Picture (cartoon, rainbow, N blue to C red):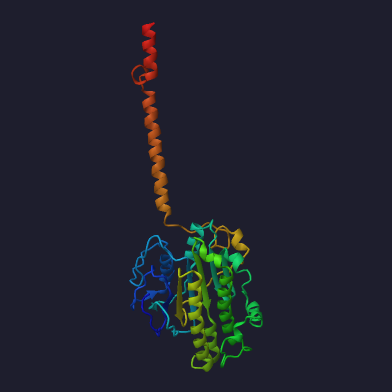
Length: 343
């Protein structure tokens, strides 16, 4: 396991957990926000449309890939003190991004194995589930009202968290605590369904947390509430990464992206759980065809030239049969002619 160090960098990508066969190199190589989906795809063993010219990730083993990838985006903070991490890299051009392309690849390659695909943003009540996630996370609270009611039930994080200056009755504080509760419930559901880590299909998780951003707007980033929430979230994410990594038997990659604010707003349509079973294209709520796949040119050329070769073969064979001399080219007529001559 590579040595670990404390992360204190602004706007960065942190690799909390990764198996030894996924080789992340230590260094200050910046990565663009729009390239993070490609990085996630490569760690899972998928191909990307354009080569990722980033030295932070080296080519891994061909026949050994992680069984899960968990990406957590934390908005409203430049850095988090995460002492137990594999590597960290500065993030340049922090534009909004999604893992829709990776989710589509997982769905298209492992449709029969029904992998887990979960994308969740509690503050926006945005949820996208596919495959086994529909059954595993059907009890996961999605709306803010559901999550807040979950905080008052048994097993709530309020009983174990040191709230300090946070107020469980304030709106911004409740949003932050709700996101912490979602992280706790995800690990609890994964522990209840440990069979997910035993199948051969990779699982994809994407979470977006904006509770710190709301606390910074409400109290200011120099407030005690903001500092307490930052310390709580760092400890929760550290344990969350360790739990996910352990549940998948050390075959999972856990990344954390911290960004104070994105450079452009991200607009995305949410989908319900029932729609994921009815819509053929998980990236389109209008049941449209899939986007252009760059493998299309390869498949088209294979089919095209195979058809041309077969057509030429049929023409050549037909021409030879049409111009065949039965007396010399056909053994049947040759034997018949000899028999006639003998008679």
